[in-house]
Length: 171
Image 1 (tube, rainbow, N blue to C red):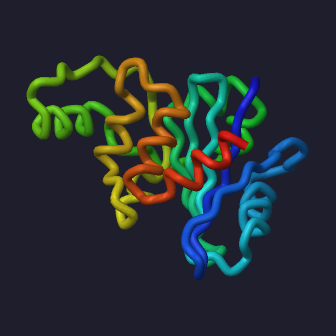
Image 2 (image 1 turned 135 degrees about the vertical axis):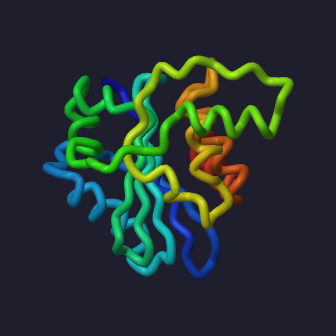
Image 3 (image 1 turned 120 degrees about the vertical axis):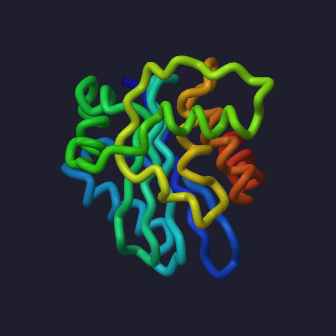
């Protein structure tokens, strides 16, 4: 499986982005250590993993601690070593995707509600204080035709690190 892992950290000077190599990581704590190494003093550290145009995972550390993870589909943990590494220990289910879609439909009645075919897992609220509610995150993951890179780009726009992400992707 091919993947892109992008660490985005918010430190004293604002947001910064860097690509991470997750190969050889033994467990999710080692992945978290690699994210911490990007900026050990960061207030917020995020890791966005986009795999095979199908799966999306976001990991969050606040001041290097309190690891929180969300995955767009539990199938990722069963289909790849990387998915199992990131989501294998995630037990807390995300909010029901149908509830998120219904809430999103209430916000925009002109958009038809797609049938969800994913089973999101983890902490869907992990970006709420940064401006991306659990319902919005779930609706992004369920939106038909939305690639993991599209989800990351929309989150980047909402949170405020779109320029840093674009600069990294163009490098």
